[in-house]
Length: 425
Ligand SMILES: Cc1cc2nc3c(=O)[nH]c(=O)nc-3n(C[C@H](O)[C@H](O)[C@H](O)COP(=O)(O)OP(=O)(O)OC[C@H]3O[C@@H](n4cnc5c(N)ncnc54)[C@H](O)[C@@H]3O)c2cc1C
Image (cartoon, rainbow, N blue to C red; front, top):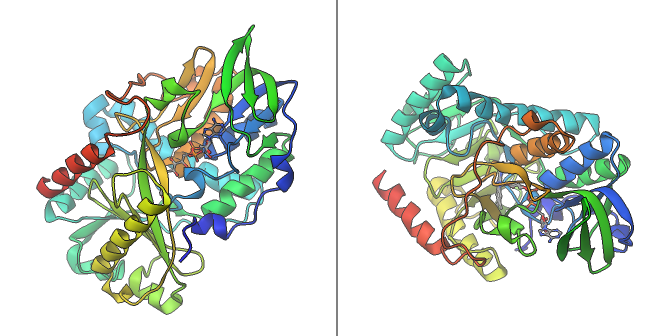
């Protein structure tokens, strides 16, 4: 078994020269973080004519963007019903719709830049783990169809076998617009697209300090320092010093994934005949899909812990047990990959993007960043060019997580809370 992201292991690597670049002089924009937010923002800033330098502490896609489930789904992280209850339909609707627009943007970027990353639109299966959750799906479907004019199909338990080879669920809600893609090829393809547009990518170049200099900023890295008129912090759940203000507003929650050996088409037809991506209705949820080479990829917040080799291994065992409970056909399937990553959670599970002390930021996609980080990358390029309405999240205050001083000691407490919630709800 490999303890590395299947996506990064099966995607072409970026250019080695990115690790030996010289950091000096000045630039219009410095982007910090080589995930989807940073790379897509850099690409669009360069397309607008800006001189852009992007700094990544490891390699492009090292963070969540190269480690996720590869599912680009519609719907907000807090759920459309909760969003409408919280802020009213008028405010919730454009936010909800932006997730669909974000998937369209991925499709367009992939086509425009010729990125071969198995983008497809099989749709998404939301699976009810309790009968009451299916009743909740029915309410969501009604809201979507009657008030937003969005197609949402319910599948009762008796008909579920046409969608999944499992007996554990109590029905499903299908969203037909959701997509799947090979995220390793996607993020690395975007890195190349950004370079073609003129972006200079510095890898193995952590930004160590950021200070105001005149009307701009000075950044230092181990390979030198650079002056930038504008700065975008796009460090997601991997945010650390010197970005402490952002760090204490984002909980880095470990999420873990296993991938089986290639199973062949007919076994995959038994598991997920329509090839939709899937996730269940728990707070501590499981998500799964078939990869382009016919493996089952199965993920979840197996443990409320940070991702590290020991944690990933323990999580892999928990995930394998969960996978076999749901899909007993896989009891003899070999596990080829097991890895973890950090999900960027804000306290209200909303995206937070804006500017503070002249430094721009966008983060907090809470497990919906494949599409939303892509979208916000493009939107931040416009926002930074002076178009405030490009940032649809600008009115939401970015609150500090109480008691968060750096290391996320509170994760097991949060885990226990959500486990209890899953038991009673
Ligand atoms: C296991 C897992 C499964 C997920 N599944 C899904 C899914 O199926 N669908 C979905 O929509 N979302 C999913 N997500 C969430 C999604 O992947 C993220 O929300 C999204 O990728 C965030 O992108 P980003 O660019 O903001 O951050 P990241 O991709 O995390 O990038 C941040 C980068 O900043 C770099 N960095 C940090 N500090 C510095 C510094 N000082 N100097 C230079 N570089 C620095 C890091 O090395 C990192 O590469 C999942 C996440 C995980 C971990």
